[in-house]
Image (cartoon, rainbow, N blue to C red):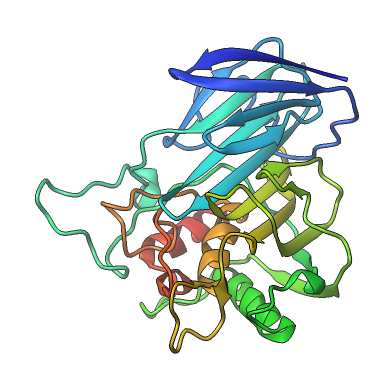
Length: 317
């Protein structure tokens, strides 16, 4: 059984679907619950009385389940025209807070708002120090699996795996062209193939946590290139899943002669950046950074981090 109610939030329609089943989520943070401030100045927090574990919250094309007390659930969709992030956190007392992406400005070093003078050209990747954080990060190594059988026909399984491993390394080893050293403690390890799918529905919805980090290709909402879900406890991320849309979009690993396809490594680096704690940045102000909003066909700009991307990771790890 389920029931649905509708409320207005931030002038938009927010749908809650209550599913009478175990929510099972393990995410975001008791640490944030009840605080007046948000995990990032680019997130808008709203207390939502009446929500309970198992309710589904859908907003801005992102959909997550309300987790059990003391936990949180987050989702991020990356679209051709931009990306959105949504978080839901349940306090130890059962209170529920919804975090929605607000104005995208980013943060400079030390957390000060990033800015660009009126009429000024955006900074280069190695000059732009902007970053924005969701508020949680991994405290353990990210052990992840790839559903190799989900690989679309236009690329090989080995090439897909290589691109996904490179995407992980771009973040954990801060791959950049700025001469910045790797002082980030984030770490990941590929554990092998799996027959299990990411806990992500075909309509771009986060399901309940199952304790396993899975990457796959599959069906998503038609507007989504990729979709990520992650779960946290306190300020610690405990699990993440990611899916790349192989139903509406075609994928490439080597971009030579590329036409109308999307780079696996490019999109995966941006989307996995969310699961490591980085949030989107305004495309007009920060187009050279990995966490800028827009994804283009045959593009690999996101595969090398910019100054702000690296500083954001350093702030977390």
